[in-house]
Image (spheres, rainbow, N blue to C red):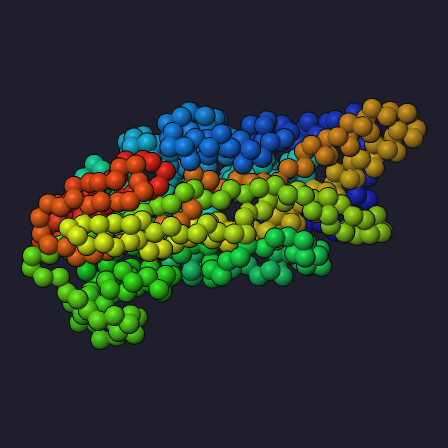
Length: 479
């Protein structure tokens, strides 16, 4: 549930009792910085997360995964973005093929999430951080890892376990990803009216300027890639019923995916499901005794990063309407187009089809975060403006022009949007599933650095191939 401060438009009158002169303002700002800096690096005050990660993202697109990880300043465990950066490092080292190190970074985040779920101290520290944002910005709040990013954490951790032969451990991770999505689905969302309370008019005014993402997703947490991988792992473990259920979930999110339609039909008939035909238009094609399944999961590019944009917004303050400038995060309104991976095996040509648009999940998450972000921004602008007014009153009496200049400059440079999100994730994922005759074959993949790989199709078993267009090594599993 989102948390934010709530005060009325007379916040300045209430705080004016402090009768702030320059020394008192300095004390207020320094105290806020100390509160925030105990859990944040100082650069967060003046530099957005997207700006800090720009060099690493460039190296990712160039296929220099280890260099991308080296460029990312990990920081201290008390930093507000520390665990987000652990996710980034886990993904970068995953792409570099260092699966053991990747697993360690993801495990740190997982342990922290478990700890946070039961710690009252965290709620107290969050309140202190919320106070510090009135003098700074949202980057001084500890980063809250949203559900879709937690799901991807378990997704990649499952694959890390597969590399060490741990199918059971991989199944545990993928089940946890499913449980997260189920819990998020059952949780009652906070209404927009409750979040905005006294600021509905300002929110509506902002939306006239704000570039709303073009996403029709019902939520930001259901992930077809996670469901597809879990279905494949369930097949490998001989749990066909669970595989059928998760293929159906994936198909509900990508209803035009021919491969998912075929798998739902195949498993539905095999399990004698009386209603499977209502989920797929295809007729069942069962595997013969001399066939196995080839599954290709292909990731494309990297997810769109949040960027900072400034907006003007009218607010009622000091008994009159005034126009203020707010710094807010935005994300690209144009999701990347899926580029199918052309495949060929033993003279059979086929191509991947889209499974999930992670760009759209990131955009939907920002859309859901926006009301709470806006309320915090409004309160912060009002608080900073009141500080500036108090300095001006002191200037009129003492001529302390330098204090007024400091307050104005500080208000401008510290007004930074919170652009944090897991920015090394893929932009989208695709899938191909085909039955092939038992034996060793050459799988050709057009447009990849590693364009050919040898696969061993086994009777009734699954051969899983993981690829991406960033240039990392193709991963192959005989499950």
